[in-house]
Length: 274
Image (cartoon, rainbow, N blue to C red; front, side, top):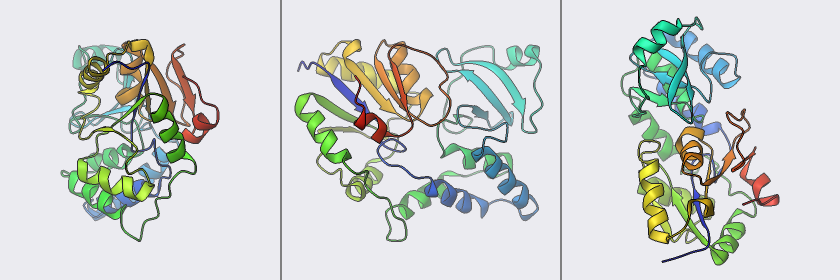
C-alpha cells in the first residue's frame, strides 16, 4: 500500500476534552492514602494542577528516587532533578544517578505528559503501591451514565473527510475494551480503519511509527503525529523527521519547523495545517 499522507492520532486527551476524570482518579487513589497524609496529598495534587508545585505536566517522576525530573524530550537525558519539596539536586548527583538516557516504564519512571500522571505521582509519593486498579476503576466510570463525555462538535465529520483524502490511524495506550467504549461515547465508531491499542508509548512509539511508515509506504515528511503528550507522540515524530500537532495549553518545550501547537484539537480543525 502506498499513500500520499498518513495521520496518526492519539486518543486520550486528544480526541476528547475535559479534566473531571483526572480528579475522579485522584479521588479513587486517595482511598489508598494513609489518613495522616490525605491533606498533604490533596494540597500537592491541587498545586500540581495549577503549576504551583515542582511536579507539573512536562516533567517526569522517578518513583524510587521520589524525584521530579526535567528531561530533554528530544534526547531523553535528565537535565535537572528536584526533591518533592522543590530543592534541587547538584549537577554531580544528577550525572551520577542518570548517566544515560532514561526509559519510561509506566511504573518506576513515568513521563508526566498529561493529567493522568499528576495524581499517580502524588499517590506514589504518599506511599500508594498499586495505582493501576484505581485507573481501571476510573476508565470504567468514564463510560457510565454518571460521567458525561461529550463528543467534540464537528470532529467526526472532520476525521471522515480526512479519511476520504488520505489514511488515518489511531494509536493509543488504552486497551481495546476502553477504546471500544470511548468510541461509542464519542461518536467515533467506524471512523478509524486501523486502531493500535495498548501501544505502550513512549517505549514502543518508534517501533509503531516505523511499522506504519513501512505498511503505508510513506515518507517521514508525509506522516503527521497528533497527540497531547510531547514525550509519547511528539518528540519521537520530530526525531524521525515527521510532522507533529501538539494538543496542549502548556508551554512548548521546543521550537521546530515541523511542529504545530494548539490548545485544543478544535483549534487545529478550524485552522488546519499539515
